Length: 384
View 1 (tube, one colour):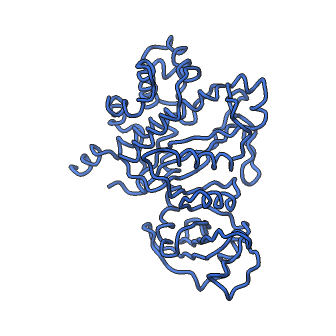
View 2 (view 1 turned 90 degrees about the vertical axis):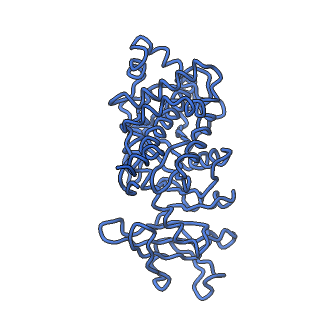
View 3 (view 1 turned 90 degrees about the horizontal axis):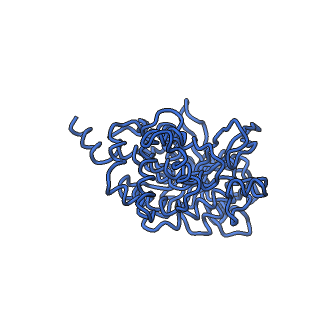
């Protein structure tokens, strides 16, 4: 078995062959009504896997039909009337069947862009006041301790992209609205909850740009098990039904985590010993949303303290801590696989084109992951 921190790679020799498998192609692209669309989708994924460097439409077209076919590929991605959501649902079911995911992980990505024409591009304000020109998106990943695969994507749109002429030029749909990153997180969660045959939760949210308490309340309201990364300044109250001898005043998450050392204990979530605390809290004295604030102090050389909100029961704290490792798997596989299959590379102006490209790049990510983690790959490692 591959070690938790050893990356899978999109360049495994089995990956392009997997993209040609008719049964897998039929499962992933069965929603495309025309055989020509299904062929184009398969060719596009093969191009993403085979093409080195930046995945341009011209380069992908040249892999199979020559550079003169660029217009055909451009039309398939940007203008052809096929829906990307059924492909994403099929992708999720395939991940569920083949890679045994443990949870959904919600993470943001920034896609820097040099120009001003790509859909959704804006001056993006990042934590610590840094400003970057580019697109801001949120991904929903099915993840286990071994690998992670992106399934759903939300592109943040500012007000200027919802007004003409930009809206018309980018073919932004009429039902699109101005979105914050928190809106994108909620939309991603809502989307994945609707996929038949795939686990509903738990959901792990690791997004610095959101009100974590608000997101935790939302997840609690829809009945999903969750773990949400929370900043030290988030305002919380002790749950006095569990800790009646303590003050009920509002305090920050960081203050609460530091103020109850007697509740700390040594645990091992599977990657080494760590010190953790689970504190019963509520997000408002007037609300009944009882949660646990998880604090973790990791050994030297790692981030010293991390804070999470969860609706796990106290006996499930160790399981919740294991789930907090999954965003690290997402970051690792995004770097090792997603970037190499072109998740960031769409340079067009079309909103549908962006979604179709990133959907097929997510399929390519799965093909690469299957090449490294599928039954044939496991047999090769066992035989060796």
